[in-house]
Image (cartoon, rainbow over all chains, first blue to last red; front, side, top):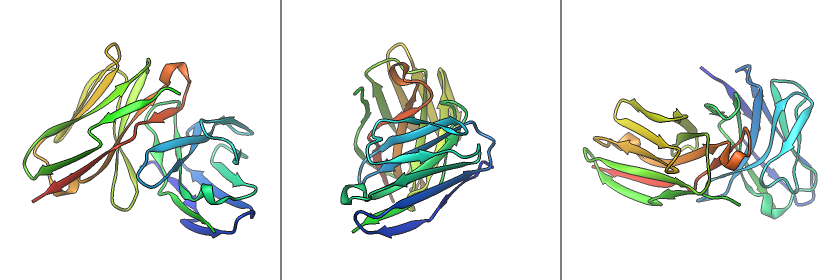
Length: 111
Length: 111
């Protein structure tokens, strides 16, 4: 069974603070993605990566950075967290645009 | 940007009945995936299609890349089918190996 693990499961951050969300996959997939989901909405792509040490911008990259230090790990970094970044964040892995496997999500609240 | 439209936005079914969800694309897409998000927020992949149809138990999905739509049929609905269903388009408009999600269909199955 494919495995994508996110940490933390939930986090409360202060406005202006730095937040790092982590994702680890054991699927040996090349692609990893970060999506955010706002209450009652679909998922929007923030950043993705298809190889270690390289990241690509998704559809809503502003205010976010990403880091892919290895094939297994992909982090999402909020350098200066803002209220508008309160959301649930999902990490996923896959082979190209084929079947995607999601982590359980991280619920981020920025106060 | 290009949108992935899902319909209906919400659907209520009685146990044992059947219905279909639809995903419309406004531009070319190489593949489609369907996911169910349960009450805990977990995203479960149901189908990946590059063409044609696939069936799994009471679920059946079809993808018509020329007519730009995909469907998900639910037969003999059960309480555990409740959740939010998302379709996601792969290589949407030639965007490469990322998925663009639809807005979701909230399905409630009632006794």
